[in-house]
Structure formats: structure tokens, C-alpha cells
Image (tube, rainbow, N blue to C red; front, side):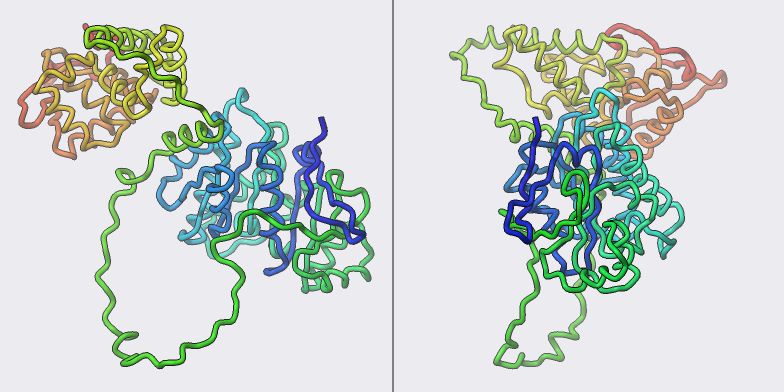
Length: 501
């Protein structure tokens, strides 16, 4: 089935069509000076194609965040997340087929490049099973694939340029269709621009840019002057998805608009500001200390799951009749058994929590437990307790364990399970878990990371680690005075009692 979206009208008044399937295979380059209508063109393309294909937008100025309200795109404020978190978000966005807007507004040039590169890397490196077709729009692409080195570090430039090169040169086989827009072709890396087979060229004034645009469209150099005469929203189109010959077109209207419209003249206030000097030159307010981003950042996985549910318009299942407390307790026990069965799988400790949750929901529904399936935050809590060897009844009824849970909440979510597992071993007097067991509880294969986790938890004042003369490790919980028996940190994973999931 051929899907043709309407971009506007040709100079002859006919509908200007863009073949979406051909675009996925051949990519697109948009060029035009500031004010030529590039962002309007991209918005029109995104709105028209939104029902047909997953999208992501690398948005350096926050122009496209309004797509979230109208079309359900998940807006990710890059300033609030680490590079590793954004890479994981890119992977999960493809896995769950959620359209996204990566808002880079508020970051300096180097951090924009680093975070965009991390997110694009996540899109690119996802497993083959998730190579779904996807439009990847990069506005102001010369910022992320500069032709020459600028003021940013070489490392940031290489990361960003490498990610853009992967998108345009190797992305097609992975289902990624790059759409890049730039103010100046001369500032865009040639190996990135050269991979596009479709072109939309808008108004431009510099001779070097006009000459390159004319070459890309197969026009004679003397015809390049025509690019100066184009009006805002007018473009020359060429490419297998657009037209086999250069074609003039005008972009049609859009349903959404950027947060900041085109500047308009505004009359100056009639009354002069009283005591202007005192107001303008008053002492600045005290700076506020920004809280730790790791503890205040929104959970991207929660957002992705919520956005996916909203996009698919999942309806809640009909409410079941009221059940007794005994039946409810019995169902919760069955839910616990489902969770233990999932965690008993050999690779469960290293799987993404979203994948575990999906399998958990499916198994609960098969068991007829749809009415008591926990939401994702509750599932996280259950998973933390299960990895520590705690049943839901024990975690809720034991006062000491409630105190441990409070202490665990001081740590980042992904470390709480490790702390609870150590606390369980300390309470029961079992040997201290090995580095391999700690790494598995954290979802990692790295023993070095396991040791760094223990150091971090100790630095927070929650535990004290000690090594005896034989190198065996003991961990004591501060204030509770629970202590593990000495254990070999280099031993293979220990399967003791309830710790073996």
C-alpha cells in the first residue's frame, strides 16, 4: 500500500504529494535561511505522517513540544536526564513504538551535542527485533553535524557527528529515516548531507549555499539566483519521494504552532517606568541550588509506558464484582507466585524492567488475575522486595522491615533492591552476598560496578563494610546493628534460602 501525504500545493495549484514509504528508504534534506519556513515544513510533514509512522524529533529550541498535546508525542526534557538515561530512553522508545520529542532547550552547545548523540545512539543500537520504521527529524542539523570544528570539545563533536553519520548512512537498514534541516549547507558535514536522496530547498542568499543547492537539484549555476526570490513557505523539491524533476511548491497550513511565534512589532508603553534605575539595577535574587537530577528526574520508562497506553487508547478492563478479603489475599499470593516464576528465569536479572512488567501483566491475565495486577510503580516495589527474598506479607507486616524500606527509599530506585538483599542477609545472619550476587540484583554483569555500589551505599551512611584478614567481607547496617556473616566477595553467586529466586 502506498501512503502519500499532502505537503501543500505546487506552483501550478495541484496537490504536492510526498510518498511516505519512499521517504523511509531515501531520507530527506531541507535547507533554507532563518525565516524561510523550514520549521513550518517539518511540522507539516510530522503532522501529516503522525498516524502512519513512529517519529522522533531532535529539537534544539523547543519548537516542537506542542506536538505532544495534539498528537501524543512524549516530550523528553534533555536537561533533566543524564546521557545514559537518554540512551536508554531511545532504546525503550523504539521497543514500545512511542513517538518522542527530545527538547534540548536550555542546554549549551556541547551538552546539546552529547545528549542528542546519546539518544540517537539508543535508537540506533536497539536489538534487531525492534527495528520498526521511524522518522528521525533533526532540526538545525548543522549544530549536530558541523562541517568544521567549533568551540565545543573534540570528544563531543565526534560523538555527535558519529551519531548523525550512523543515522544517515546506516540507519535505513535499521528502519531509521533521517530528515535533516539546516540553515546553511556549507556548515553541514558533507558525508551527512550526501546520503539524502530527497531535497526541499527554501530561500537562501549566500552564493556558496545557492550554488550547492542548485547542484543538488541538478540546476544550472545561473538558475541558482532563483533561491533568493522564494517567499516564506516556498520550496524547490526534488527526489524519488517528491518529484523526478525540480518542482516548486508552497507548504500548507499546520494544526499546531510553536510556542514562540514570529516576532511582531509592539508599541512601546506610553507611561515611563518610575525609578527605572533602581528596578533594573537592583541586586539579583540569590541563586537556588539545583537538586540532584538523579533523584528528581522523571522516570522515562514510566512516561514511555503511559504515552504508549494513551497512544493506543487502551480502555480499562471492566470492574469485577466485590471480592472478600480472603479471596483478595489468595489472589495476591498467586500474583507473588507469578512474579517468582518470572524471576526464576536465568536471564531475569538482566532484562529491562519494562519487558519484565509486560510479561508479568500477560501471565497475570492468563491466570485470571487482571483485577489485581499492580501498576508499574507498585511492580517496581514488588520486584525490589522479591530480589531481596521478601514476600509481600513479610515486607508489610514486619516493623523492622518497614524501617529498612524507609532507609532504602533514600537511595536511587535501581539500588534499593541491592540494599534490601544485603539487609535480608544481615537479618538472617547469612554470609555477605558476593560481588556476582550484588551485580545480578542490580541487573549488571560487572563485578566492578557491584563494588562501586557498595561504596556508594556506605558513603550514604547506611552500611559499614569490613574485610577480615582472609579477605572475607562483612556488612553491618547502621543503627539496626544487623550484620552479615563473613562472605567471600569473589565467590560465585550464592543461593541461600530465600535469596535464590
